[in-house]
Image (tube, rainbow, N blue to C red; front, side, top):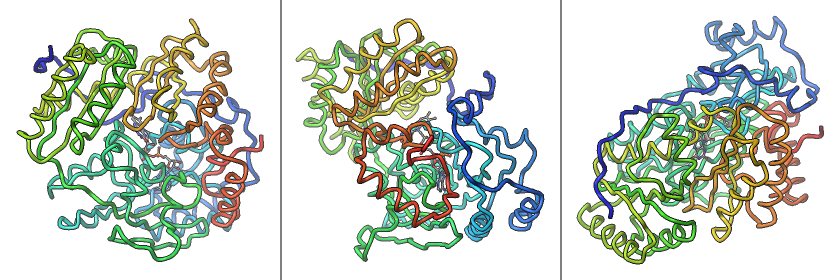
Length: 504
Ligand SMILES: Cc1cc2nc3c(=O)[nH]c(=O)nc-3n(C[C@H](O)[C@H](O)[C@H](O)COP(=O)(O)OP(=O)(O)OC[C@H]3O[C@@H](n4cnc5c(N)ncnc54)[C@H](O)[C@@H]3O)c2cc1C
């Protein structure tokens, strides 16, 4: 039977902390671990530092090694650069002046948002200048009637959600890293997240951007309208290009009306087949109010419960499905949910479950899903894969991978946005392990490619996946990407070694 949620959580999940900082040794330098050759870029000297100080003042031109260190290492502790300078601009004009100078000197630049990216895109590979967008965090305007937010790109997603909720709106994107990631980072990675099933991706929700090209040119592509068919849709070049074509400084984003009625159900299931049937029934029975649909397997939940000392509201099942509905009428929504749950339980698809609309309990159920990523990182090193796969074969790769890595890994688990055919496959172990690496890659990408899936559903390509892009993009498409890069950034100063395949 499904029953109300007991008040059993003691854990308080605040904003994300980089796990490596508290408990782990620094990872190897990227150039050593992945044998990369430095590009033909200039090296920072005293005159460069003086020039940067003249643009952003000395307090925002940071050269102290220990202050820079957290910006040199990614969230997963998978990649580490050794930049000597960190710049924190506050205005678009400062970003423009920095890029213009770096381009003229051929100094490479790594732009960084909240540094929560999971593909090693946000940190330097060698000694690139780090351009942190942290201080570009002004909210400029909210149009309550049209439902549009205009803000600088360094605003933290969670702060934006709080801000727009005061105007009866909501952000069209939500993800576990919301307390730390920037909206500019979200747009640059075209982040998917937990609400994509309802609101679609950022290509649809971003109405306009302001971006700075590699040579310092400021492009004003701002628009406050959903409809604007005036020539090439240039804003899309910056959405999902991971800082390789320009730096986003400002954006306008469509914000849906906040839902008055939010319900969350957490369900226990015997098999992936039962989960798929339940998902289909949810789409049919819940229709327009379905706003999230997340799969969690037994081992993913186990990691969260162990690492954060939480209790599950359900006893142990091979699979769990987290469903959220967002609507405007609680009575109507509850009726729909009850009908859906009763039918699914009668058919025997759902074995147990709990449903709630109390805000604190809704948040606690979401914690179980949102902390999986950090729980796995706390266990040691994680080989993380983010693939799109057809739902008919969605989970098959998890047992296959378990078999391949055998006892070498602590845990091989799968979770993710089943509503969007997006699986997060994770292989965790004590520390980076070459043997596991060889067994997992490129196998996981070959497997995905055979099913015509995507080797990166939502995290992007960054540094870690550049050599696997070919599994999802044909040579002609790759060539066009290279040509576009050459037009936008002829000196290749923006996020080198990222997205496009490396020569070595
Ligand atoms: C716990 C957790 C949960 C996550 N859940 C999801 C999820 O559900 N869905 C999802 O898609 N991702 C998820 N991620 C990955 C990550 O949070 C997203 O990729 C996020 O969009 C990155 O934002 P950021 O500000 O941290 O960017 P960063 O990590 O700092 O940068 C990411 C990339 O964007 C570039 N960039 C950043 N800001 C700018 C800018 N202003 N202009 C140009 N380029 C820029 C960087 O150079 C880099 O290439 C999760 C990560 C964690 C740790």
